[in-house]
Image 1 (cartoon, rainbow, N blue to C red):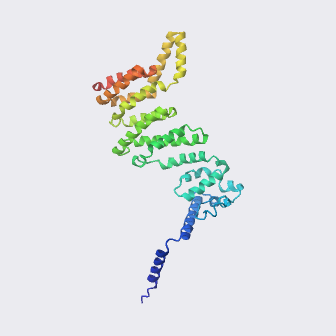
Image 2: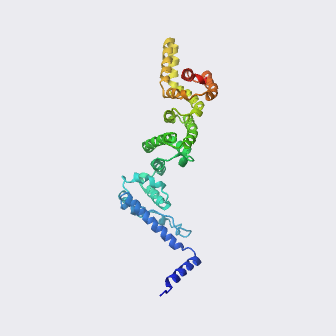
Image 3: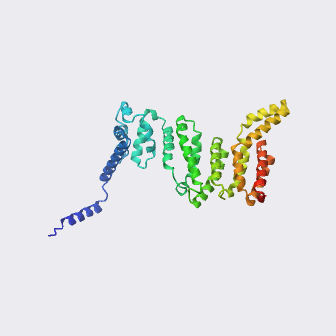
Length: 351
């Protein structure tokens, strides 16, 4: 026989919920229980159960920290003594917490950051935050495709370049894997064999100007930029991917023939050697030119010769003529001549 009690009871509960609205106490309690579960999971994931107690002791914002309780500062301070820090969060465990500085769960992230700030060895929280960001970026951006990171790639590249020149020893120790990951990521995004043609073209269109700008602004980043450009040229060999950028790549490479050497010191020696013996001065200048011909920049220029066409040669000729007449350093002027000699030999149809 149908009684009707379950349906009636269910309708009554639904009606009460609609009439009274959401229960703030239930919501707060659920959020707190979820946080406890997350802290437990974190402790189990790192295989250190005492960490749960340390995270639980960190101050957490809630609905109870209103105008009345805001002045009670002791409610927002850890209760456990400092002597337990090494047991709750030992030194061997602290590097594993870096990635959790950027956890999407705000209460969990706040608990980890509060513990980091309370630990005496992490008193320099800004350095620890940069260190955490470096290690987290290696996991976040590895294996990404161009549509996923196009909007943030320029900022990411600039940050990595600046981190390469960071004075903190801890940053210098952890930034090398990030630079290596960034280099491999850039090359993979520009490799037509590893991505969609449309994505590769868009990536090259954004990355080539970025590399050239980085070479001009950051001296310490020039070896990395030239290495990436060289590998991009190798990967694009036999394809027209870089043909549209030849006129932009060649002038900076010609200038770099003189910029990459220690010009101030060599100019000083050149001046005194010329004053003492003109023949020895010519020998020194010839040695400098010979060294520049074997440099990475000259190797890149030789690899770009097959990409010279009649169209980009017309826009390239005036710019190289300016480098020939007003270029700084004999290496640049000789490089212009060597480049056009190679173009005449390999690409006579473009002249």
